[in-house]
Image 1 (cartoon, rainbow, N blue to C red):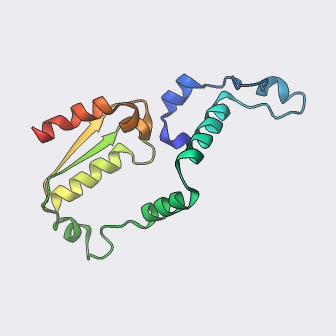
Image 2 (image 1 turned 180 degrees about the vertical axis):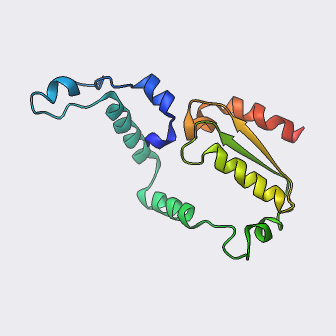
Length: 150
């Protein structure tokens, strides 16, 4: 869950503060032999409960498995052969603080797709929200993509 957020955002929100919910000061309780938690633990608890209410565990397994095995190049001799088949104009968006899909990887993919002869633009969204930036700042994403549709 924390890989969906950026280091600056996690630091801003939580730092090394004690958990704001309950009496869980990790600095005091550790000396007393207890397992006090940091504030980020409360955030993870909340997100976990929220996630359970929105997703059936089996559908999540299916989604993550699909992500793991997705490979548009596998059936082709080279990436260029695979991407040369693209007829649409693509726009790839990297997010400056995304750990899951780092912007340099997205930028590199856009360059490979262009080198294969397909039309592909790269745009980058500056955000401290990490992978969740497209959810946390939809207006910024829309502004970034608007020139594509004009």
